[in-house]
Image (spheres, rainbow, N blue to C red):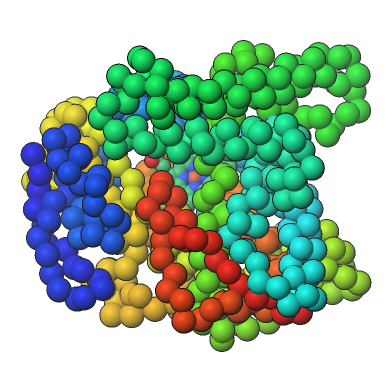
Length: 468
Ligand code: HEM
């Protein structure tokens, strides 16, 4: 079963009739179409999305289809499960993400990692070399989420941790092989025979598991020592240590939940920061305005900073709070280049949406933040323009949109858990980098395209020149 609606093609302005709710049977057909074409073919109506979420979200689940594809890598982590298993992890994680300890610890990690990145950029600026900023963001955000999740320095930025590099290569490859299952109808046979991509996946998961279980065991041993309960607060700042305190020491549970955080937090912020730098290069007046705001927002301690490392170490929550234009500029980036460009869920029972359209048990309902963020009847005739001002009120304060309209973080009960964490990281990175550097594309004429993956990567990276 499929529904046809009128959607607007934002590139050419023409209108096309296409599918909205997609039954299982159509899924394979659509999966082969790339995002540029896919956006014609799937859901574009926020009203529809809204109706799904408000009225029927309780009937939409990750579903057994996603579970069977993802379970080898992500196990029973928050992304793959529904019902009580999901509720338990959601409650536990929401609580942890809102604690002061995790906030403070993660901010320290972000500041340290952006300082490392700034050092690399400074050298590139001095020697007038181009850099692939997307690649640097990928490494830097991986190091950050890894440190926050496990309390361990991966150092993929400088490549000093061999074991860590083996883990991160295996994890990337395992994620890619897992995604392939969505387009490879023979994957179950390959898995049974242990051949091709499935053999590679199994090997990579073995490497990932060996690394993660060793970390969990080490941490469990550390935590069980009596002195761990006394003054060594640092040991309990990372997510693993905190979960160990709360949930006991079931290694499989910890492995699954923490790997889900790594996958959620790794590429999402890196791709957003990359697109952010890209749009700032295309709109230099916005880049200038962001840099001005950062300078003005700096409080005394930051203002006195002697160098970039000093400034990075002192970026405070107070000054981040004042950076409303930066917040808006990041948000428009996410509207136009959402890190999760297409998303879908399954109906676990029959339902009728408020506009009368019925969906059946097993139907996949898909929505597309990428297309929805560019539609003129939602965002106005200037939908495709990069205007942070759109998100500011008369006093210059950031104005929230409904998550059912601005869908980059999804909406409803399964809305992104790391939204605040992601904004804080992106703002710290942007504040430090734009305070000290001006970015220009290495080749202004070159077309920049996205790569169709689960996250919206820039195809071939983003090559920029950096100036002091
Ligand atoms: C720009 C950055 C980010 C964007 C655009 C983003 C977007 C999303 C989206 C669209 C979902 C819904 C996925 C689905 O159910 O199919 C999601 C879920 C989730 N995100 Fe994020 N995310 C970002 C960063 C992060 C970070 C940094 C973390 C954690 C460190 C995180 C943790 C999660 C978790 C745990 C869920 C699952 C929530 C649940 O199922 O209850 N996200 N995110």
